[in-house]
Length: 220
Image (cartoon, rainbow, N blue to C red; front, side, top):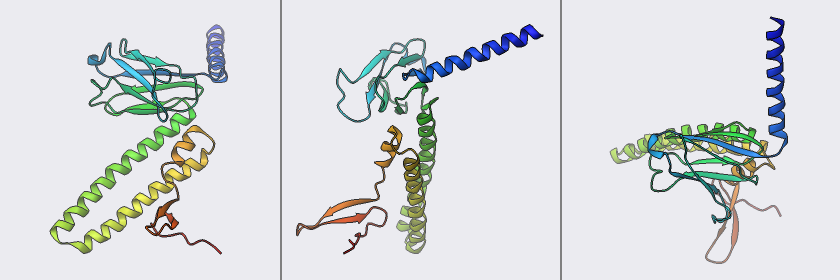
C-alpha cells in the first residue's frame, strides 16, 4: 500500500511539475479536434482576428485522425477556420493565443478552453449565444405584434428588449474592465464603447451616448 501511495504521489508531483513548466515557458499550444470523418485530410487555418491575413501571418495544417494543432508565436486573438469549401455547418471559433494548452473542439457549436482568457471567452460566448437567441425571439414577437396592430404591447416589449440588451452590454463592459490590459479585455472593450462621434451637415461634431443615442453635453 505504501508503495502504491508513493507511486501515486510521484505521478501527481510530475504532473504538477509538467503543468508548471507548461505555463512558465510562455508558449501557446492549441490542440483541437474536428467532429466528422468527412473533414479528414482537409486543411484548417489559424488566422489573425484583425490585421492582414498573409502567408506570413496565417498558419494551416491538415486534419489527421480528426485532430490538429497550432503553436502561435504572438499573444493576440485568432480565428480557427476550416477550408471555406467544407466549413458549412461548423461554427467559426475565436481563441486567444496565450501561454498554456488551449483545448479546441470544432463542431456545430465550437469551444475553446484550458487557459484563463479562453475560459473567460467561453463564458462570454455562452452568455452571448443565450442573449442573441432570446433577443431574436423578442424582436420577432415585436414585429408580429406590430403587424397585428397591437402597438401598445409591441412598445412595452420593445422597452423590455432594450433593457435586456443594455444589461448584456453592461455585462460585456464589466468583463472588459476586469480583464483590462489583456488581449481579451481589449477585444471586449471595443465591442460596446460608451460613446461615439456624430457629424452634422453644418460641420459640427458632437459626442453621442451609445446607450441612449443622446448628445453628451460638454461641461463648460
